[in-house]
Length: 499
Image 1 (cartoon, rainbow, N blue to C red):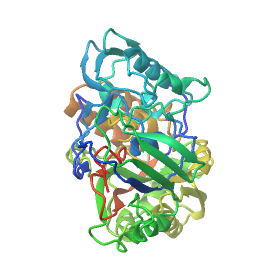
Image 2: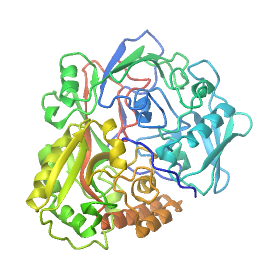
Image 3: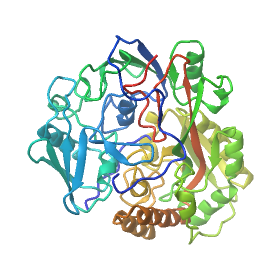
Image 4: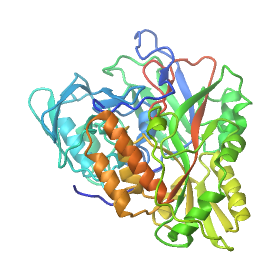
């Protein structure tokens, strides 16, 4: 298996179908009647484009949520891979899968052909830094006759249909790759909405793609505003400035009436990641002291005002299979006395609860004898420093199923020696072995068991302290229906969204 370098990240199965307690609700359905011109939808989003809408980086999910891009597969409510640009697929052998394409067109008018799809996947596979869904995976794609694409991996990958649903493995037309040093999704994607204009990091305009294979969208376009401040996003909804406000802060939830407020159980976990490579938390005994100092129930009830559950592991209660399979962590070090040890805890303010979480953690750690300095920035200004290990600890909200929908992949990317988003800088032989073993398992239930064994090994290092499992609050105007309330946070606006 070829391991690839760390990448910038913000922050999927015929064989794997984690059950969710929350519904991937699309109020009003996904089909469009095709009648009427439709009005435009105004949306306030929490995270601005960080990389000029690069589909292989932090902006991949943004493009997916706005209905611009899509891949060969997508996730359904239970986390199974279902058809998108591929209408069906089959496994030829341990390493190769054959995908049959549906009739579809790119937004520049060209046809979605096997050659175009193979070229798009080849470009994604060669992206630097590597897109998260391909961390540790070597993938090749080739046209295989009429409407068919063969996708092959260097090692057996039973989660490939899940992996190809990733927002970072989208299919774009040849025009997108005209510049060898950049990829442009403007007018080159296949989704129901075409990105037509971007105003820096403050706004973007999208128009309906009239020839979308899934039917004509019911709104004529989307006007997106990027508003990092959660209170400002909520106020924009209340005053009629926008129709939808994502990630409403819990502090603002009561300001919205019950009809406007939507709460969705998600697979997002807020965690404290401790720098295991250098600094105070290189010592596992000091990490154990930090873990023992933290009261997760106080965070769930206080900071999140009951809109979250206390942290129990990397996988939270939205994955209903996890609770019965959870394995008790082993090998934890005994806690040392903090004795005034100085640590820097960093987080970002795009998610408004995180600075408050960090403040409460500061109080809890200081009560245990640590000296704590907080550093809060906007995410795009923080990520590279976090990945470089410039902080002792990092408070992060991570959707554990976002990249692939596979419970094992998140462990490989976030907690192994060569992981692409290893904020804890963890490199532990027992962890790497447990994750590697889990990656080879094909059977759904057994793969889940192996994931839980690996989770226990990771928790045993105290590199990560799960704090809370989040529920996402979305503000939705009374006139809006058909919005996608997605526990995986990949979807928001679709064909059936209307106002």
